[in-house]
Length: 120
Length: 106
Image (tube, rainbow over all chains, first blue to last red; front, side, top):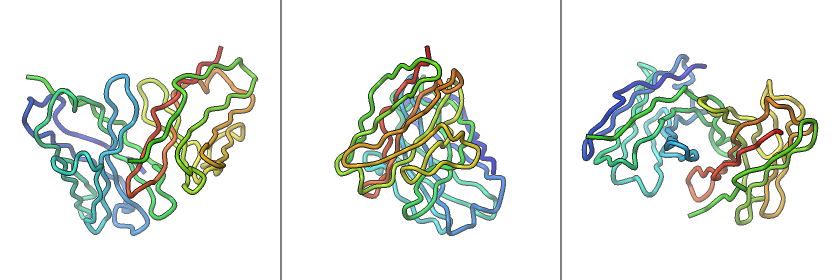
């Protein structure tokens, strides 16, 4: 399995950060997995943002629910992230990753990550 | 919100045992995963469901979870094990990461 993030590397403050993750196989259609976004600010730790099921069911980090939307397009093997009203604090490497369901909610596959800088 | 606490740094000599802890309220009731992240790379899963090693992870990696503390143990630590390590759990309908531990092998 390979995951590949893509999108602009520079976003202006107050605008919307939009990223796409392309998945290499049909596990995106499986009921056995969720697809998540995790970010890492420079020099900092990992922060889970949200996850989506193949059906479109989502759950988000509580502090981001008002700004974050994650969508999925299994037919094109893609998921997307939209983070609105960004500030410099949203500057980070953004990873997409796959995790399981129920008690298997560990991330077993990760993309290489893409750096997004928020700056005017 | 649920929090996982890790020591910021751990040092170990080559060939010795490295122990990295992860603390959280009643953590033993949750399944803990561990990730290794080398500089400039994506995280790699090294342990899940507390003590299960994914395929391809060396046997020197082991895990446990009891009470409020989960532990990742690296036996016979090698220079290649120098990296940041993160614990992670599912709690209160969210995925939570610990702050990370920098393992130095010197």
